[in-house]
Length: 93
Image (cartoon, rainbow, N blue to C red; front, side, top):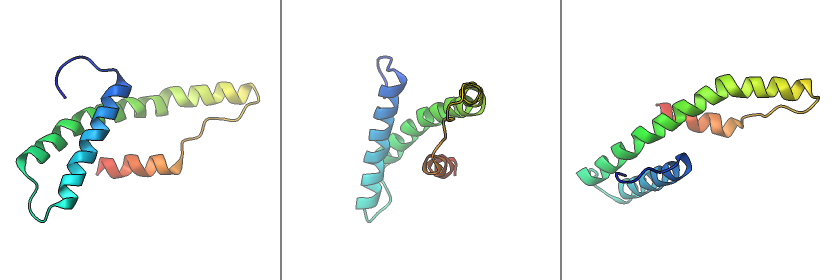
């Protein structure tokens, strides 16, 4: 994950691919994951947590303001899916 600067979308895609690869290696093995898999997991987890923190700020600050503007305009608010909340909670563990 080192190298050039990637945008948030590219970074999250790369992170998701790395976490998926690490999970696949863990699930397919009958032994303790090799150090490379653990290193890949650790390398991918830090950027993911950073992006989740950014999202939490948007969700707690910008989203309520936007929803108020939508409500004032007679429009439906943006709602966060329960599934997304569950995913965030499981990553926080």
